[in-house]
Length: 137
Ligand SMILES: [Zn+2]
Image (cartoon, rainbow, N blue to C red; front, side, top):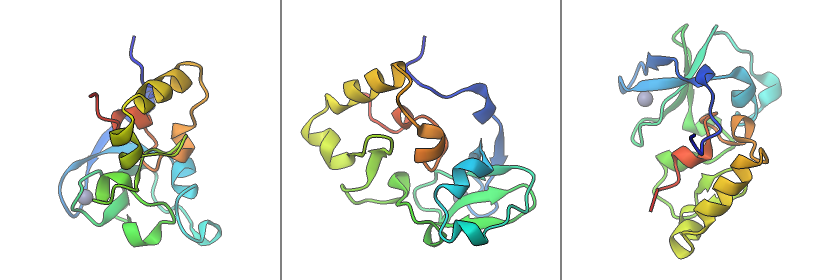
């Protein structure tokens, strides 16, 4: 059994219109938790995807060609930032620096995930389990 809390709903892929990488599907619910001025955002696409390419400015893109940039979010996207103070785990606030100083933070995240205390779908801007971004060793 996997440690991860992800389910099959996030397995669908689509190509980013800018960097041409494959993005995984993300729910409008996830986007609403991270976009600036969420009250002003209207989902225009049927489905949305998350681009995790570190160099791409696009964070979310829709199947209608619409895009949401890094600068339009209120959340710092860990996979797109070099800073050590960006989060690996958004549910419990584990940063890259925290993990480097104390790799046991990964075990903590696994334990929380196993007991269902994580909130990756809304807390992590990728909508996927934070453990996907926490290095294995
Ligand atoms: Zn991209």
